[in-house]
Image (cartoon, rainbow, N blue to C red; front, top):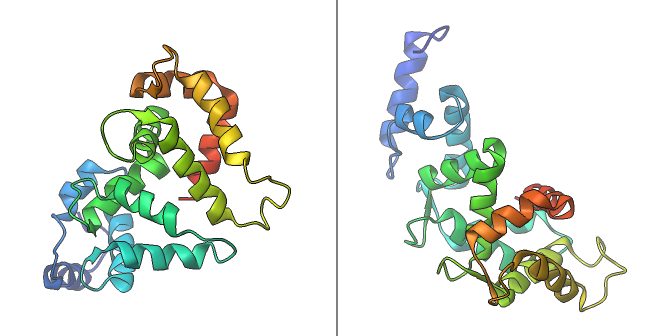
Length: 204
């Protein structure tokens, strides 16, 4: 603990952590729950606090941050869905803990963990199933965010065609919804879907 750092630095860090209004759980606990080191967590925490001095992000702030990354398109809808995926306890705010748990999976999670997370994103109403409409809403949001200049040749119905193809492959028992098992099995078997998952990672 604190090897190679002066005692003074360490005390300053602890004080800094303690003065925040929404004080995150002890860094040790977050370190145990995530795939980040304590040093990385401290750096992430400073960045998080710069953007969000209150210690939590509401949906509007989240949308503003996202719009800076995708100025060429409209990222509002995608940011809304993404916010709901990060806000695991559905209290309308993303805390540093929520943010780290999501980021840890997306950056360093296993394929299985990433697919679980992606399923949760696509399952908009969180009922444990993905419908064709939910998949279409997410796809449209991604296309909107990427902007017309990224996909200039795409027709208006491109997201729908994309979803039709995906959904047919995924809905193994043809009951009109995709379960998490169907989703994970299809993604792992299908190289195109896995490639799309890479695309999906790039827009996080």
